[in-house]
Image 1 (cartoon, rainbow, N blue to C red):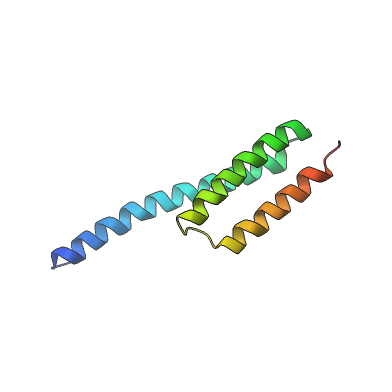
Image 2: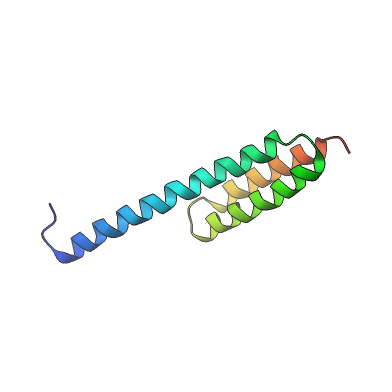
Length: 85
């Protein structure tokens, strides 16, 4: 049990951040899955734009490393470009 008020506040902040981070990581996985499961190029491009947005938000909040996001974007765009044109 924390004794100091600053330690109590840090524990509260940590719990709140943990919830937000779990939610955002789940959003990343869902967005990536939506792109990879799309059958036609039109839906894939729409899902790709959504995935880019989520990845950029996660990089901005330092949830994932910028290079990690770049690699994911590259992999997704490569997949979308290989779909039937």
